[in-house]
Amino acid sequence: KQEVTQIPAALSVPEGENLVLNCSFTDSAIYNLQWFRQDPGKGLTSLLLIQSSQREQTSGRLNASLDKSSGRSTLYIAASQPGDSATYLCAVRGNTGNQFYFGTGTSLTVIP
Amino acid sequence: SAVISQKPSRDICQRGTSLTIQCQVDSQVTMMFWYRQQPGQSLTLIATANQGSEATYESGFVIDKFPISRPNLTFSTLTVSNMSPEDSSIYLCSVGPLTENYGYTFGSGTRLTVV
Image (cartoon, rainbow over all chains, first blue to last red):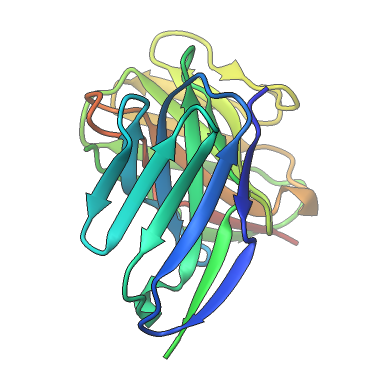
């Protein structure tokens, strides 16, 4: 069974810093990987989707990379802002079926 | 990507009662998914709702506790039955990608507290 782990579990940084969130998965046979943001008590907002054949995706200040062979993805946030404070989740979709495996999440706090 | 309207956004319920959560999608989708997020935990898939057939439940979830309806390609409900405080969670519905360029889309979630 696919297991998805995110490190660190929590991160606190001053405003303006660049930061990296890590996601690792045990089964490299994935269809794609998706990064989400979740504000407290709310649903999920999709940030970036990386197909298994892609190495990275960018959207604004966000850049996500994928190294399928090593079972890793990173989410890079440039010039962090207090509004970036949220929990960030990565999820992988397997090659078969529609099962979506979620990571444990990284809780980010950006201090003004 | 699809837009999902989920309601209620939150509710406080008495133990032993039931709550039905609704999800409306602005596009026709084959599969809808229901997730539970317990406090401090990540998301766990409850079941996959297919239009025109019985929902498929994941291990640890049963139809008597979480009955699901899927009357058409744009709507689904999840009922949390005979609630106990352990059912206090965020419940989210999701739909799969409309095309392969899009990922999964989630509703805004229902925050349930059972007292």
